[in-house]
Image (cartoon, rainbow, N blue to C red; front, side, top):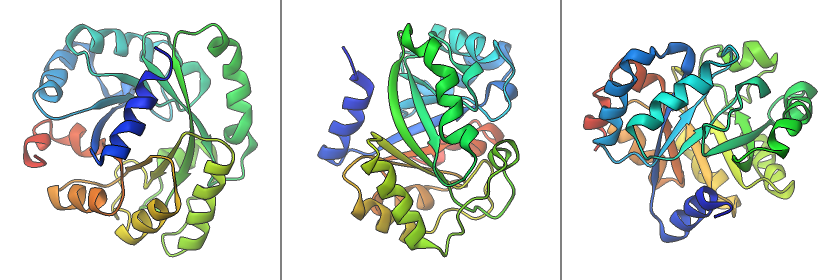
Length: 241
């Protein structure tokens, strides 16, 4: 079924059903412990698994997803740092365009480079506007993309960037405070952006507590992504229930 995962995200938004995604970085995963990690995920209310990172070597994502698929039926979405991370082992790809920065490599050139693979791919392709928000520390995305995040106090710019993503035909907007953010995104940002959008909103970066998770949901996040916090504590999902 085409667009099966996107349609599930959209229908969940319409129903008011919030979704939780776990982000796994292949560079930080050892294949021999993936079964343990996936067991932790399977035992909680996780809806999606994102796999990717800013600096993953070619082939590692492929092997990582193969191993994940051995132990879980949760949909796996590739969250690529560049086109070399694409693999048909995943279920879908977040076809990212980094709209918060002015580097054409991550606005369109990476997408052009990925087109030959995706043309013949079985991946569900989900066009996603990716917006990096200042989370209090320099992130790998900043270093690799050579772009700056939007400061959290520039709410109007964040809103306009998110709206531009929607007007460009993106199916999702992903507000990202960055891996290991020391300052989670202000809920006013989530709320005001969500109120302006008709498409689902993904929020990630710096979420470590049940209160932060619930605040993100209450203020309009349709999907919340947990990454670094899960890497540091595989049992954190139990405290977020």
